Length: 240
Image (cartoon, rainbow, N blue to C red):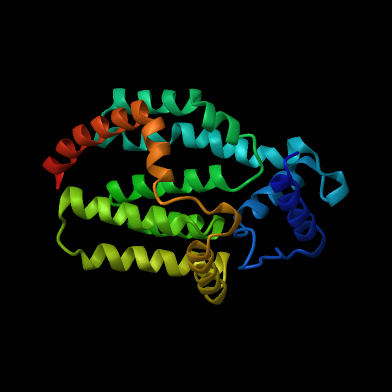
């Protein structure tokens, strides 16, 4: 297994042995992947660290990857059934998605919660949007980037009026689910730690233009996504 998987497997071993996830705001990520691993471990009867196998660990990301491939179906009312099915097919055959869907790290669960968050927002399911946002944050701190990007995209695309009711319901869902899944103090620590590491850099530091280069490398998929988004914008605009 990759070293990242092995470290997170050790965290899961502690969760199985003690019932508590050893979260460190300065390192690693939130507890959701560990709890997903806890479920697959108990379903397979491998409830000790030494009994864990690669299959047991990777089952949760694999299931998340399958659900992620199906998630565009939730957008069918907005983008059309044909486009939704095409998006499902693109995700299902994507080498990146297939690879990371068998990798015991939090990226695929985070992508799944993000997809559910976007679908819930577009369909006006505000409590579900709040719950999905909680799962995103409690899975990996970089969720703040996706949430910020989603907010800016919503304002730029639809220029909506400030909806106090929607914001209130989403905030209530956020508070309710977060109170169960995590502690507010831990969340604050994780955000502070993420900001500190983001400004400090470290071994994962890259030049500012690195991400633009990666996007250019994925330009065919990016252009298809932009075309689909523009088409969907017209449909959604008629419904607002």
